[in-house]
Length: 300
Image 1 (cartoon, rainbow, N blue to C red):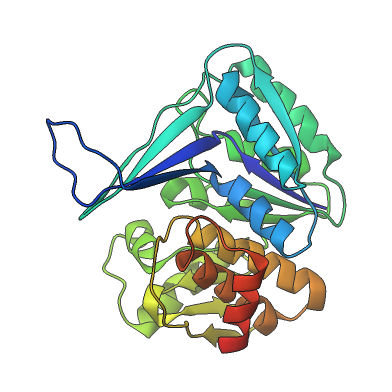
Image 2: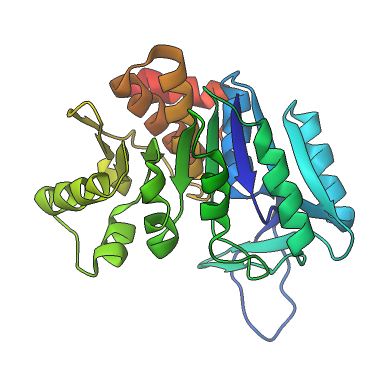
């Protein structure tokens, strides 16, 4: 079983306008909403690839109910903790001549609620995979991921960490199966401008020396490169098409890689499927559907 964790899930309300002008009433040309959160995105793409997962996290209020109902309608198993106060956040994504976002705070997660989450992770057992994705809300201690991984350290569990900066670095001692920094995130971690292929490999190897078993570096329009624990380096390009939104593309890549590796134990195929899922989401409104993913796989 693959378990995903989203500490602060959301409803992403996307509004489209010809132009956006501050200080006046703006009228949309269209709008849609999606269930959001990095771990949830991974679960959604896994469902498109016919891979089962269980989504952990916290929900609250009427928006939390909508998140739970939305996942259930997609056949995704959720095992959320319902918080007694507040509402799950609504994030506003403005698509106009420029793109803007307003990301909200979300409900207060108490120490007691987080302890309940730790107890839920006891269901994760040998052979399972857990995906820790996204930032940690302000109401949870900065060592939240470490506390989860410490609880799992004596089990044979594949750990995936999709986080940035110190949050990622703090998890490397638990030897995660996969991490996925992009070039900008590598630059932030190592306090240098990471640009050419040699610098990318040097940084990736340093992360592996600190504990990461496999490192995917996403390179945007240049594709992606995987530095694998078997000593091999795998590369993939991208498909050229109209990019509608990059939101969720990285999460889609993680899901595709995990699905591909579970199906074949082949790093090259896993990277190709991960890249196809990331590209397919970039070319879609919302997360990619299986038909779009297959189309991109056929073109890669």
